[in-house]
Amino acid sequence: MSSNKWLPILLILLGGALLLTMVVFSLFGFPQPDQKSDLALPPQLGGYSLSKQITGSSAVSEFTELHGKNLAVQGGVKGIYGEWGAATVWVAEAETETAARQLLTDMEAKIAEGRSPFTPHASMVVNDRTIYVLDGMGQSHFYFLSGKALIWLAANTSIAVQALQDALNFYQ
Image (tube, rainbow, N blue to C red; front, side, top):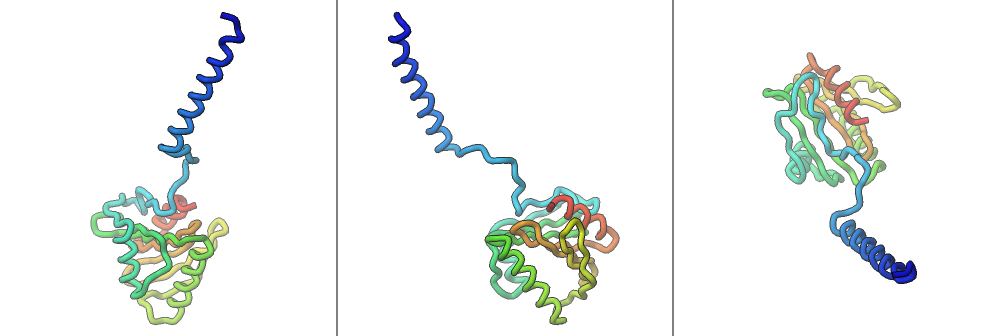
């Protein structure tokens, strides 16, 4: 056979391979860069391992109960660290980073009214990120933004500094 006879067969095989590739990608999706979800939880905080997590609508329902109103969140997750809850993290995901900033601003204003069980302290800036610091209910509390997520960390005072550092390292 001459090379002119192989050309149509080669083009048909190439077209078939291309079609098969397109079908596979349409069924299984295109590979995405390795990204950590805003709703992920650190495996450890303050030396304690994640012992329980609540996700999805259950977590969002818990946020609603805590605040007594519906919040503009799309998803959420709560992580409890240590057998007796040495640390707890709540992650509320908003639709956009702007919406997350609005949640933070609303929370800051509500706490400033003075009717919450939390006593605010001076905020601090770590790596260009503002961390709000509070005390209350026998623990140290911190909240901050990470992309579209508002993170709230509650930790026993003995591990609070390390738990905050672990959380900041995880939610960069």
